[in-house]
Amino acid sequence: MQMRDTIPLPVTTTIRAAAYILKKHTACEMATEVAKKISDTLTPCIIEHVVGAIAPQMAKLLTTSDLLLSTLDRTEAVRKALANDRDEMDDRLQISATCIETVANELHASVEDCQNALKLLSPSLDTTQKCLNTLSTQLLTQHTPTQHDNDNVDMEIGTTQNQRQTYSSIVAANLTPSIDKAIRRAAICAREILLDPTPGNNLFPPDTQHADMVKKMKAALTNICKPDTPVGDIRSVTMLHNGSFIIELETESLASWLHETTSKEALIAHFRNTVSFRTCTYPIIAEYLPIQLQIQETPSSAQSSKTTIS
Image (cartoon, rainbow, N blue to C red):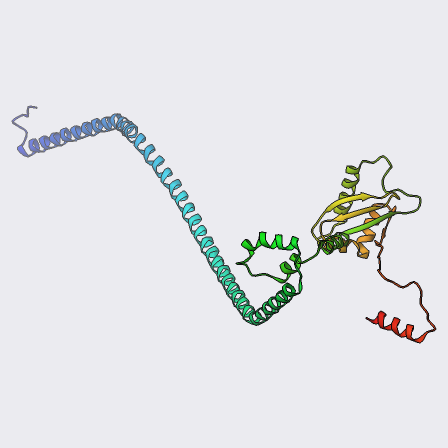
């Protein structure tokens, strides 16, 4: 830009300063515009690339955080369960220890009671054993052995010489065959009951097999049994010619129980009142019983009284 020489210097300087300022201002506006355009163009791309690069890592970080939270929850649940189990185990151990201590105390008390009972019974047992030994000696001295007894003694002396004999073994060894049979018969009779059919009734039809009779008798006994009934069952059933039945039981206590009123009524009700209980009677043979007696004679009456009393 050319200035005329006629223009004063201050004016020229002012014009140049104004031009310089306008030039600088235009350059700053252009730079601002370029920076704005660059920012508008590059910022979305940068943001997109940054988000694309960070997104997978953030996803993994979030997944790991969720796994950590779930693991912490499970760990806490396991810790609580273990704590509860430990408390329950402690309680059970305490209860078991208390029960064991109680049982031990009771066992100790029972042992002490047994020891005291043994101490109290020892003198009585010794006295009883002495009496039994004395009685066995008397029986052995009073008994006259026969040839049969001598043979039995010779056979058993090897096994019994080192054993202490009891009263029952001595008596059993010295019983005569007739007495032994009588004792066995008495034991069998104590276990038997006799059932009679009521008039006009039969307990079983005539063509009933014996095995069926036994089954029905056992079923009847099972039906009337109670919790306090003695243990046992029917051993044999014998039918008599008049239609009565002799029932042999396994134990005498069971037969005694059946002879009670309530047991009788229960068995009769089971058979619908077609049977009745009957007391067994047996003939007795008395030797040398007089069949004549002079009542009016005083000596005979006195002798009879003495005989009866004795």
